[in-house]
Structure formats: C-alpha cells, structure tokens
Length: 194
Image: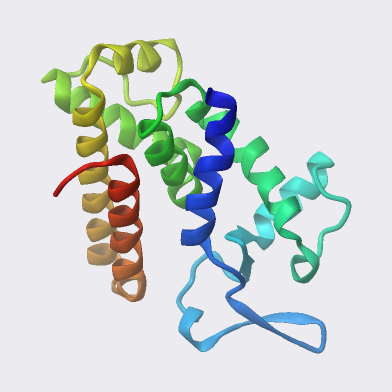
C-alpha cells in the first residue's frame, strides 16, 4: 500500500507548491511582484534553481534550466530528494503526508527535527535525540505513539515554526496565511478536526 502513498502525497503537496512564481523575460526567470520576498528565488512546481542544479548534477534531469522544468521532472526530484530521504515512505498514512510536506517546505533535516520534537513532546521527555535524521530510534518511537496524536502535535509544531519564522523575519509574513492554509488542507486530508 505504501507504494501508492507517494503519488497521493505528491498530489496534495503539488497543490501547495503551485506553478511558477516568475515570468520569463528574454528567456530569464524574473520573480512576480507577489513573490518578491520569496527566499527560494524563482521556482516552478516548488523546485528552486538550487534544487534543480542539484538534480541535474545527480542526473535526475537532463537540463539545468528552471524555465524548462516539467511536472514529471519535478515529481522525480521530489521522490528522490525529499520523499525517500525524509523516510516518509516508512510512515503510516497521515503522518507520511505531514512529514513529506514538511520536508518539501522546511527541508529534510528541518522536518526530521520537527517530527522528533513532536515525538519527544508526546513521550514527555527526551526519548530520542533531535538530530534531524529519521533513523531506527525515530521510526520505533513513531510505532509507540497514537497516530492521530503525533499528527496533531506535528502540525502544532509546524504552525509554531511558521509563526516564529515571521517573528524573526517579518517580510516572511507575506507567506504566513499560505503556510497556515497549507496546514489546514493537510489537517483535512488526514482527518484531524480542529
């Protein structure tokens, strides 16, 4: 069953990541006005120039031109560089969606740390090391907690993270509602009532 989870998760994450945040002028990507504060720079399907360069170096795509990136190529990049390294493929439905979406939005290591914090919060102490790597200890801890509880706690930590990001860098406030709406869509997909 988990083989189907990537496609299911990617469909939901793809909605949040959207299309392109740039216009092409003389063949070059130029950020749209509403994206001027996007620290990721020009993106298409959520893939940044830097992520595309890494994928090109890995041989995942045969070009390094953000203006030419296809949805199929983007999906391959997500599967190889986010889905599998995040270990979302080892998690039950619901948690895999939350974790994969966080890996895409906050980086694989950042997502791991948020999940590890959530696991420790539910356990009432430092049961696992917050090291940004989902290894055997983290996966075992997931098995010991109630699935809906860990999903709720993880989403709470993500919301706090976004609010903290805006407090630290106010220009990121342009994206706060989008991030919180993203979490609300995921909450609905997982079946968590507010």
